[in-house]
Image 1: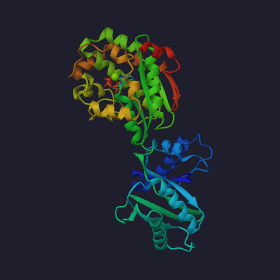
Image 2 (image 1 turned 90 degrees about the vertical axis):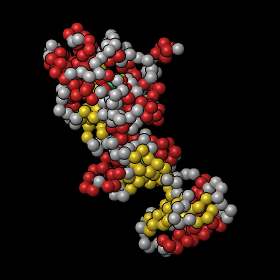
Image 3 (image 1 turned 90 degrees about the horizontal axis):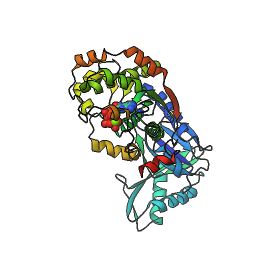
Image 4 (image 1 turned 45 degrees about the vertical axis):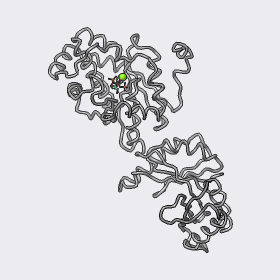
Length: 406
Ligand code: ATP
Ligand code: MG
């Protein structure tokens, strides 16, 4: 079927009252970004719906992209015909040929924006319904309360639009409407899922990744970047900030007792993420912690680590079981990357038995053995920022990486 337009229905944002306009504008620009490669496509974000005018572009790939844009409840490809009843019937039959498989119920629902059009809505429903019943005598019957297919007919000034399929969108809120957050992104399974969930609630993210050469490899860094590229398809391009962490880890290892290595190290990570947020207009720090999953993710640990800041530290997967996180990771296509076995900076320096219930006062006093300001300043001086786009590849450029794994 050659569609002319995709009609997009807003999700939760339709309830946002005064903010509605900025939500719609943001969604419009996010959709425009997501579809920028289709140069004939035009986007019209209106009050009640957003219209994607295809102008000859194939609807399939466009709809595939739309499914990844947050803030869309559902959408329907539609067909435009001349304002002539016989044309409407012809098009409706062609549409139903693709959708009717065996006995099904339907109804016709007409809206008329052009009141000059000769047929009223009631008459259109009745006449078109009758024509469809005659065209599919064995399979179709009418059910106005709970039909399998609802054929929507919109009589507008520039033509009549027919829509029947309703395709589920990604839900959530348009990325950018909630403000900016700093996402602590490792190469693991959890933080990419946390990032996805934050994006889904309208947060625009910048990734903060700590790396520790030569203890961590180039591949570990490339993996975190490639995970970012997977997430960029939900958000548009994402800034990736790599923060050198070697000096901090070596110093912590030298000066802090083994049981507190992890806690102090995490305090420094959080300090740096917050410092970056402050510099770059971030409102919160996000991470991939899940309560009780490992030693650093107990409430005692969170208390001893979060002590370094008053900024909100948000944990989208806090209450998720590992299985639930893995399921989302598979759905968003980050899982296979996340399980590639490149050592993360935390894995390298994790002591065999970190404290699951660190004491806040001790954590503070061990940290006080370090030149926190100097260490932080040098790490911040060494950051590198890259803009990563959906589909950018970092691991594949180096075929040896995969050879190594075989
Ligand atoms: P993940 O699967 O996200 O790595 P995890 O279960 O392995 O999580 P940890 O390694 O303890 O748990 O990390 C907890 C959180 O700390 C991560 O979800 C991430 O937000 C942050 N984090 C850990 N390592 C890094 C890193 N190298 N760079 C940035 N953030 C990190
Ligand atoms: Mg990890």
